Length: 203
Ligand code: GDP
Image (cartoon, rainbow, N blue to C red):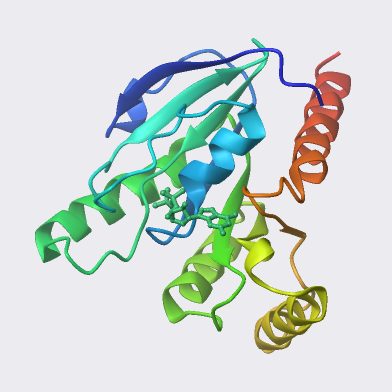
């Protein structure tokens, strides 16, 4: 998919205030500092559509971006940031769970994980929650440029092995790098295909 336009639409913390139209949307979420803003900017060919935050955990909002005038990319707050107070964490969890539970336009989520790290409990728990709630998602491994090809393969396999302890199959996944644009076409084509399928179904 060629990105012809990418515009900021709105930020809010209330799912009821999200755009009312029926455009398909895709939500990006992960731990703070996982490389989410960089990935969104890489996918949309923009330098700073998503704010790469100097202080992770600061942007605790649901951010909607309109892509090619026909789908929404949603930048959700990074989770699991230690410096956020317990209260802030609770509020955060509430509006994120509300977003996922209530947002009918959501086609699929992308859960970002840093390819260098071992599977983290918070990510695994979040994926389990998505699965239990019937919310489709793919995993996006980020920062692949930091590893050699063999190490990438090993890390993905390790992740698979951990997931297969609780999942019947490995969820769909992408290996990406915002630095060298690895995985860009794969993610965009995946979204494009889902969008085309949705159009077919709505005819
Ligand atoms: P966010 O908090 O998840 O939005 O993460 P950012 O996009 O702000 O990135 C966090 C840090 O990781 C920054 O220092 C980025 O420059 C760096 N980073 C993000 N993506 C990549 C990547 O693909 N490769 C490398 N080498 N560094 C990255």
